[in-house]
Length: 259
Image (cartoon, rainbow, N blue to C red; front, side):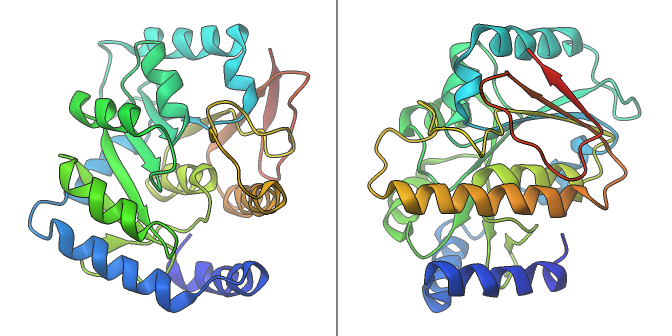
């Protein structure tokens, strides 16, 4: 979603959730200056082009063994077969808290999309293992950006506000819909959505402590709406994988797989 298309949604979300736009912008500036000459080159996203993007959210369905087995099957099938011209290449994009689950399964995500709310140790392990950390700066995570980002090796900065020279805006608000935006922006041929349980309870990997449950649910519904808007004009083949207990439907999904 290009910035001109994204910004009207951002203004509506900011008004709805009482987000201070100025604080968002100030943290974008903060993020841009922490490692100005060491931020990862966004050319790293080229590996998404023509790939099968496995986009893993932190919903409760990823706690199920059937879903974890499916993730392992997809990742094992693509090992050692990476070729930028082939659609069978699998690129793993993990939304924040799902990184912990991936690591538990022995999977190093190619990209971790995070606003640093997830388990910090898991984020550090993913970075050390070679994941590109797509770190999102907004008005409520200034301290985490300042204290954590300097210790990551492979960082691409993002914002929901005005993009800067080295801080990008690919659209999206929650970690989940920003992960989908990344796959769409860089032209994944096929997208497998896992753990995108926006209508379900808060999962173990989503957040250890939720101080405001109603606000969290409101953000999840915004994320669900944005996933639909992102996907509806996409040419990618989109499959949503979930379980019978955690179903969420979106516009733009070609097929559903219930495990």
